[in-house]
Each structure stands twice: as C-alpha cells, then as structure tokens.
Length: 251
Length: 146
Image (cartoon, rainbow over the protein chains, first blue to last red):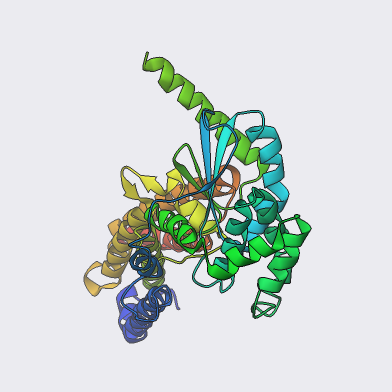
C-alpha cells in the first residue's frame, strides 16, 4: 500500500473482500460450534449424553459404594471411576496403593468407591458386576485392582475397539487369581445380581454431575482427573485442616 | 486494513469465547474418561471472575473490540485516531490479562487449555496490529497539524 493512499480509499476498495472474510468467519464459527454441540448429544439428538443418563437412572435406588478405612476419619475421599477408562486404571495401579497405605490405613481419610460405567465403554458394566460379585467374598478391592491391572486383556485395544467380544473368561481368570470361590462368583455374575447396585452408584455420579472419570470428591469438593499421590495428600491435608478449624469455630 | 484485520481476528476470538462459554455453562457436555486440560482449567476457581465465567468476559471483550475495530473501518471514522487509541488500550489490557491467565495455567493449575492458548495468541496479534495502527494514527495527526 502506497503511503500517499488515503485510508478511506484503501478501505473502500477492500470492503467487499473484508465483509466476505467476516461472513466466512461467522459461518465457520457457527458451524463448528453446532457440530461440537451435536457430537455431545445422543442418537436422539435432543438430549445431551448426561441428560440421557439422567433419564436412564431415574429409578435407581440409593448408592451403595465400596468402602475402605475408618468411617470416623476427618476426611472423606469419594472416587467415581470407570473400569474401562485408562486414566482410572492408571490411578488404580500407580496411585491408589500409596493412598491406601499412607492416607487410609493411618486413619487420615475414609474412602468410598463408586463405579460409573460410561456409555461409550461396552464392557464397563460387566467389569463393574465382576468386581461387585467379588465383594460377596470380601475380595472387592483385590478384584478391582486385578480388573484395572489387566485392563489391556479385556478393554480397548490399540485399534480403538474392545480386544474381546465377551470379557467374562478374562474376568474369570482374575477371579481365580485373587482366590475367589469361582462357582459362587460365576453364579453371581451370570445372574446379574448386582446390576442394580452398579446402576445406583452410576446414578449417584450423574446426580453429582460427574462428567469424566476418574472424578474425586474430597470432603464434598470435586476434583477431576487422576490425581497423583502428592496432589491427593495435599488436598486431604487441606480438607482435614478445614474440618478441624470449622469444628473449633463451632464450639 | 489494519483495523479490518483486528475486527476479523476479534470475530474469531468471539467464537472461541462463545464455545468456551457454552462449555462452561454445560450446554456442551462430553462424558470422557481422560481429562483434558480444558476441563481442568475451566473448572478451576480462576475460570470465574466477579461471579461470571472468564469466557463470558472474553466474549464481551471480543465483541467490544470487534465493534470498535469495525467502526474504525467505516469511512466516517477511518481517520479517527481515538479509535486507534481505544483499540490499543483494549488489546493491551487483553494481552496483560491473557498473560496472567497463561501464567495461572502453567504454574498454578498445571494444565493448558488449547482454546485459551488460541485466545492468548489472537489477543497478542490484535495488540501488535493495534500498535501499528496507533503509530499510523499519530502520523495522520501530525499531518493534520501541518
């Protein structure tokens, strides 16, 4: 642009292309947002995925989480996890053993675990059932760990699909590995004895607006994503401090 | 031409902020198992400012910048140096605020939201162009004085 061109003249000559560019931006922006919005809705297209789940779990009973530790501990950690979710497995394998040993066993916190099988994970409900059935024999936590640890044997493979069409034989080997009475476990699994419990725990996740797994609530405060041990310890310490100070001020 | 660029970039930014607002308000919900940085950033306490989501403030910022820059492209205000000054101040504030948010993402929240990065880049580019426009406007003023 020559320096002696008046801004007015240059503006007028470029007005057409300029308005065209603005129009393209508007169309592209609106289109992208509509696409994103639709991809977060279910097949009926009129509900969000979460709304759809709300309908599905409307009649579920009260949640029955699996617990660990001393129920009078000053801090309550609640975990919502999906057995087929890689980041849940990562937390369960790498972090949870430390949390158990250094936070729960010394009595710093009480732990509640809720399963939340996400709709896109085909085998997550079956995995939840397999673990729930182990609870009958007081081996829930061992089985839960096995299912997460062996996720690659039944979960999603590198091609983005489940590596097995029926996960039961894999879960059965896990049941054997943790020393369950196989006949009892199998009859529980086949009858779907704890499907309602799984649904009730998932319903609790939906009620609390959990949108990704794992999600933790530490004394009721939501934290999304697989926390590291250090992050968890820091949050537990803060929650304990707040619980003590509010108890003191209440006196 | 510079103001045209600023208004076009502001329009892009408006859509980015609009998307984040929908996300924050729950109109776009994605059930996921691995958390991405945006969820963590957008659910942190810094994602709200004076009771409103930062994304809403962002929408307001981009809208105002777009309107002013667009007005500056109209014949009537094409040589109005006040437009250049306002744009420079607005985008300068935007750069500082984005820098603060980026600092929080990197060093406090430890998560990066790609939309926020896009927004920070857009604001910075708008600021640089506004600075050039403001420099030009000072030349028009000196010509007028002569």
